[in-house]
Each structure stands twice: as C-alpha cells, then as structure tokens.
Length: 159
Image 1 (cartoon, rainbow, N blue to C red):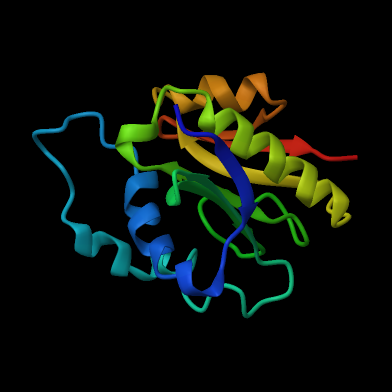
Image 2 (spheres, rainbow, N blue to C red; image 1 turned 90 degrees about the vertical axis):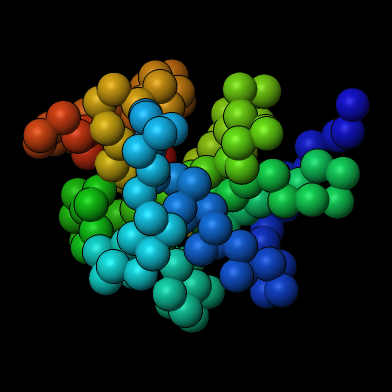
C-alpha cells in the first residue's frame, strides 16, 4: 500500500482544482450526474478562479504514489458557506478511488491545523444534510450554523 503525503499544492497542480470542484459536488444518484460545465457557473467558479492570488488562499493535497488523490482548499469569499467576514470557506474532495480510506479525515485535520496556524478564528463550509461527509465534519468539530433547504452551513472554531 502506498503512503499518503499531505502537502501544499504546487502551482503546476492548480488546474486540478477544477476537477476536484466537480468532485466536491455531492451527486447521490450516479445515473443523473450534473454536466461538468456546472463548475463554470459564477456561484461555483469563484472557489477556484485565480486560486492562490488572494490573501488567505490555502490548499493542501493528499498525494499517493505520486498522484494527487484529493485536496482541501479554503478562500475568503461570500459563497454557499459564508458565515462572516474573515472566515474562509472550505472545499474538500477526493477522487472516487480514494474515498472511504480515511484520507479525507487526515486531509481535513491537516487543513484545520494549517488554518489555525495562519491565525483564522474559524472556517466554514456548506454540505447537503444527507451527504455522508456531513458526519465527518461533525466528528472534526464543525457545528451547524444555519440550515436551509436540506443544506447545512457549518462552522468550525479554530481558537
């Protein structure tokens, strides 16, 4: 079994964030997938566009056998998981072959530690209430900040 390395994303890997953004969209019915072009919508595009150019942009990847298995990234923006100024929103995704192996947990723990190290008071995200990942977020300290239409906006305190 290959060892998992958690590390900062390399500039050459930034284009992978588009693929991972699509993977981050919870699609419970594999027979009714959204078209990949959905990531071009302004409401989603803002999570990856010119990533690394804003203060506070942060991304860690999980690498296995020389391949990026997934990423957790955050950016200060007014998106689906917005809870307040200065609180970055988090996105996380693993490519399907790497799910269910504990990699997401390690990646998120490392990301929370990195954001804490950078001095952020908290981090937020949005997740569909029925998405199995919601249980992981609760386990890692995220709490429901707001609920709307089956979606949870969650916040994790970092101080």
